[in-house]
Length: 315
Length: 305
Image (cartoon, rainbow over all chains, first blue to last red; front, side):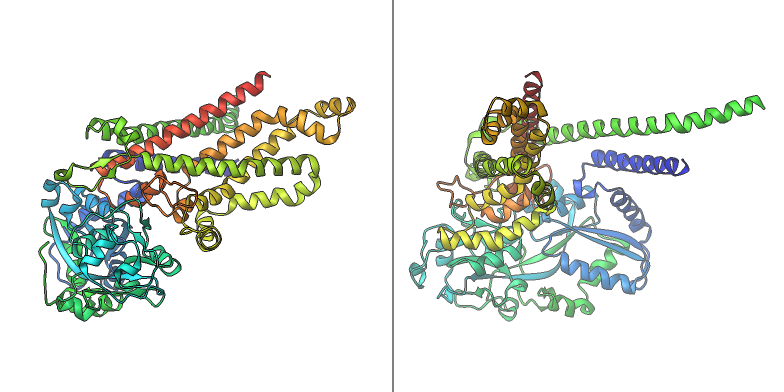
């Protein structure tokens, strides 16, 4: 009987905590991803501690912070958090995915301390909300046009690429290759990768819908390209391997040197947004991400450190 | 002394009677409140498209133009969801068409033709099917089914057919096990009466068993349909997600759950785009309500027979 009482009490406690989490979720209008009880307490404590911990040196900062958003930036942010917490034992940095839109919304509403995004905040949020956010460009990601290895084309001009993605060219023979149907593999229209590719490679041309396959993961895109004859898509440089063929753009190879020198234009900043100027542990973490100490890790994971860029962009 | 004893027995009475009753009632109420909260939440989010952003439900339901990222200067965001709705309906219906004969046949085989084999082999096999996570179905579909269709039937492989086949396998255990239960529930007298009248075994199955089990079988079919409608991951992986209405089973297409999963994280809450996704979620919820109502009506019809 004692056992029964125990289990009843335990389950009651569980229900209570669950319902408080739900109530909290409803009032804050947070996304479902944050509805777990631990998640909501995490956010609260981080908000209070990050303000308290303001006067601190870079060594041994304490407090906790959450970074939510872009899945493209997630591996780098996680690695940075791991190294950062090794040197700052008192600090606790939580990194979550969820997508750029989620990250920006969360940071704008105070649900997270840092919002990770592939695109500028103004492209996702209403103007007034975007203005309250401070942009921290932590690194650069390059993208390559990739095709199935059977495609006998090594280079595409900007015009050819636009014609392919808008559906004007539908066969590789019209782009200097063999007689083979072109199969476009796109990202969902909300994706940051697609937005970057559309802006810098296609000059903003609206892609033809209704002819392209759509995959939302870099891994699935790669598999579809490798398996499908005549397929074309775009991938972050860190995902390009021997199963797919990376094309030159306007005769320039998608390589780190060409991106840093500014001759290859298909790249984008990865952003970490904070609401207002960062303080305490958040500031220390952001400083660490752009520090020289962290640079080798950025390169190792396939991103490009900001300091190596010889060109810059404002939007 | 007496008072003390009385207290003690009261305590025991409380322990034995009320604590359990309280816990059960509490959890029951909690579940009801949770369901209501979910419905209200999805409804408020889903209706925002029409009340806050002032899009017409007619446009949402019947337009094929889905351009939520188009700038207002070029004609504003367009959120016609007809392609996704059609995709969902087509892929589930095709799955149902392929799965139903198969599932009902299996149910008859394992209950009537060979109950022993059914219990020893088929029942566990069906249970295994239920336990396989949908990402595994999707992955197998992507690695085996898609190349198979591409090489043998043509097209890209990513297709309506691939989506339906994956779903067909996923809803098969639901339909088969519900149908089998319905057949098992038929009173023994029915068989005996039929056999006593000189009917053969197959005649009994066809003319007596299947008609009497029809409400149960229909319930299984509707449950399968509900599952097919709501499945996201496995279908998304093999459907190709091309925003168009398919002209043949070998064309790639997209459904409601796929567009929701692909776009939800990348759009900020409160924007027209995100609200349109919530509207589709609301539509899925309404569909599942309709299916549940349908199941109840079928159940009632069976009961009154």
